[in-house]
Length: 112
Image: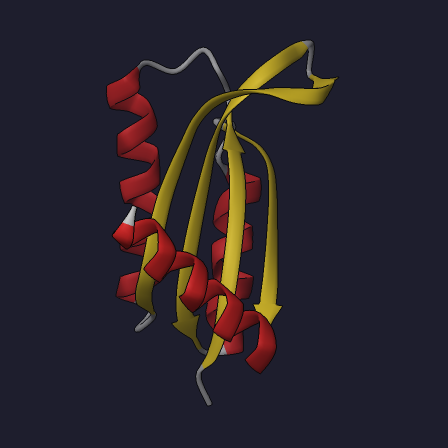
């Protein structure tokens, strides 16, 4: 059974733009290799964090929205934990209301 998920991860600010994009592609590749369907991808850029993590006060924020089996999320999070470029991550399973909201938000972004 495919569920819809949204994951936000923060990459270390010491990466170059190319390294940051390469890291995002790595995780997208990991998802697609496991049979996940990527619905939406957003790069929020370099943002200031609420508190310092590992003496870093900023980070590259990225959002991936995808449909996948529950076991795929486990593999993705193991990949996040093993990669030293990832400072923090959070994956959330979207219920039907959250999925509808995410779709409206995506459509609003496309119009703007």
